[in-house]
Length: 229
Ligand code: CA
Image (cartoon, rainbow, N blue to C red; front, side):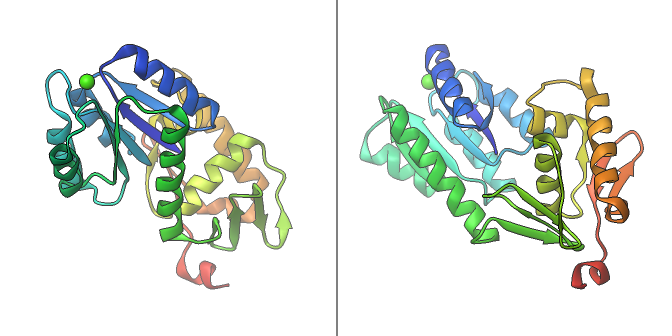
């Protein structure tokens, strides 16, 4: 799960990033909303933590622009503004939750967990996803192909789960690096290719559902007939 954090206070940014990373989330942190807005295009987050008072583009302005494109991804406001008016305004403009500063990290982690659970609950209650006869069980980290459990590494599992949850969606190598490995640039884009080749091999004939778009990236494309089987 990729969390985008926009917070200009360095100390707070670091402590939140440290804690959420320790909880197993991928975190991309920004000290301003302008850069974050650009990054959203390349690497859509699963959840956004948003400060309101920022240098440049303000939190609520970011929220307006973000919500024009994306209604679904949860946005949690973290702000020193604590008046009822501020909270109501943010919620009405599309924030999902509001955490007044100062807050405990425990509470933040809980709110993140709950928001993400609600999100995955909309797709599936069980954390079970299936496409083209290949399925992944997120809770138990099991991947099943033609009734056989696949022996996948953590990264291979993460890649497969990402693809099966978003069939037909094109992921660039950079996006995959960012989401699965947490890297920021394409220095290691060979890493992606190597893992994709391994995953394909382990999927044997279902490996054909992983399509390569030369110079762009990868997508999972299982035809309807395959999915129905
Ligand atoms: Ca601030």
